[in-house]
Image (cartoon, rainbow, N blue to C red; front, side, top):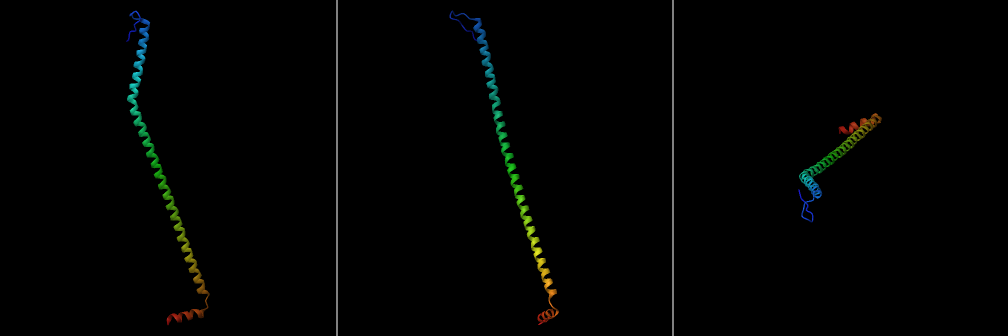
Length: 120
């Protein structure tokens, strides 16, 4: 505790009490500063870790979205390809049916002539 001396060199009790409070306030402030200095690095590391976690989560979501988009495109391509194959098969079937109709519509003598030509 500090003693405040008056002009006569004697201690003033009222000023001594005030100095004591002032000293207590300084100690409190120093304690708070010390505690903050100890806790601050932990909070900083926590916030950096938290930011890194958020970055990692965001990157994972982007990757998942890209995979889903790729899967959708592959599915669309597969469906298009499947539809194209079905259409090709329908076209072949129509061609076969048309060919059958043409063969059945020909007169018998044309069929016989063809058989003779192929036999030669």
